[in-house]
Length: 432
Image (cartoon, rainbow, N blue to C red; front, side, top):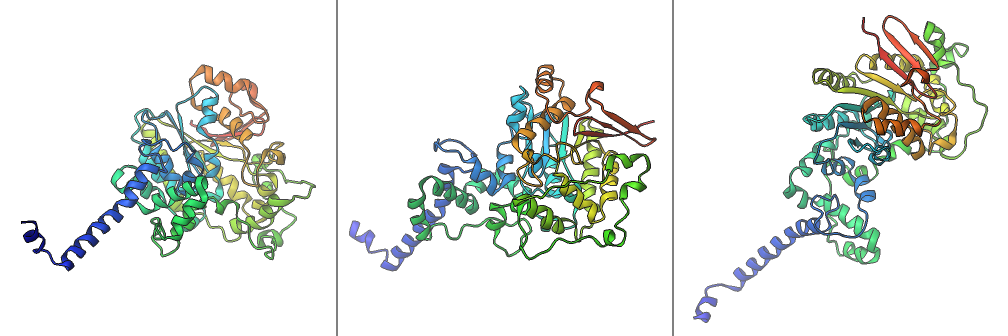
């Protein structure tokens, strides 16, 4: 009987069946691998015994943040790029406040900020939105219109797509390489994961992993050594004028920045060269601005507090904005913002922005500064008296004008009011 059954299948048929089975098993490889390694902690079934965050989050910030969005929706959500991301959850928790969630990404675009807002806005617990912005966030075609958020939501909300995704597998391999280097290298040599790829947000035929593995490189990249610093034509034509002279009573906010020191290392590279990339052909994007307008309308309709935070850069970098002729635009940018929500401003010449020990590079402040900034924002968004008291107890170097005693100066006109504290300003619209 067995012989009769066997004779019904030719060697070719059995071979094709074997190939189909092998193909099916190969197709299961990413699913099984991603389920076990789980680089973005979708299921957390297997305890790998090592920290995945450093590699996995940097490879795809939105995917990490979407998957880790808390089951109990937070009261405060922080949106923005790497500077907003530095206002980490653990700093809020350090003040005894656990109801904030940082949804900031390295190298985030305004479109990503907007799409993340759309993802989180159904949160019924939401009381405050904190958005990190700066003038350079509104460059036209910023980072080529990159948007990693739709892919993150697609994978984060569909386990089947997540477990079968080759990019997720690739990140898992990177994790294992970090832990078990030589063994995983042999697997790569065999070509097991050579075809892994991530979907490009712009869907262009470029290397998708290159953009996703190092998205913060746009913030810290160094232009070639032979690219000389230049003076903007507007400054070359009228070097003896300063934009603040045309601002009337507001001119005192923007006094000329005069610093007699020589920067070195990454500070010098960024101030001399990266500023050229930022401002040489800058054009303000009204499309990017429209995203904030829509967020503001929704916030007012839903009684959600909206706060914009302008993070600090070193004073020399601020001076470069003026040199390229955008000082007045930088002022007007704040005036437009306060029409949408309160503006907490740290990016002006102050003892803090002159202290290089508070920065890791010309754009990014260090973790100690991050904690101080979180403490000031917490006082504006929370009614938790214990957390607020702890934040006020730990104040140092940066003190926003939250209380009357914190105010060092105040200016106002029919349209707006600017109160000043120690290395911090709050811009608000005047109503009536």
